Length: 142
Image (cartoon, rainbow, N blue to C red; front, top):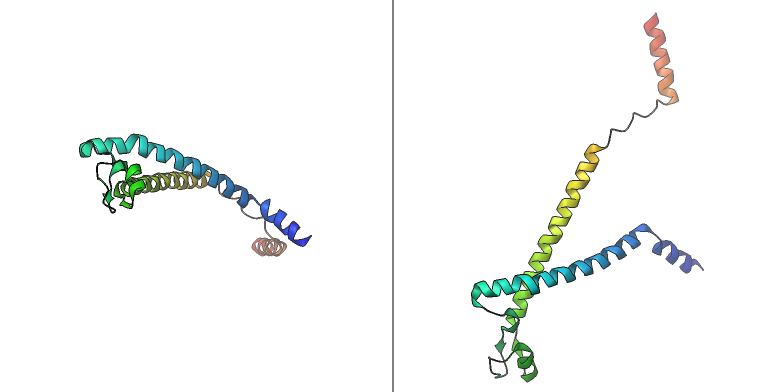
């Protein structure tokens, strides 16, 4: 029963729940960023570069015809798909920037929240301090 109790304590800690929520939100956020890159950014970049479809940029390594789509070229043999790599690299850079901005906003909000907190009231004097205050007051009256 000791292992079950330990596992229950571990699983019910707030940190585990926070981690699970973070992973789920992170996966969803990654899907959104992938869609933004694949559906919005890469077509624009391809248009600026000269109507290039990055998903079909590759170097054939098995003698395939380079006019084939990437999927067909992969079926015919090995290819060096540098267009896919460029897309994933851009995806990573944009995702890193987004995460940086979220963390920066969180840190700024936390600093503001901490600055707005009123200072903690002074701790009440201990018994020794009370006695010393009484002695000081008695001496001052003399």
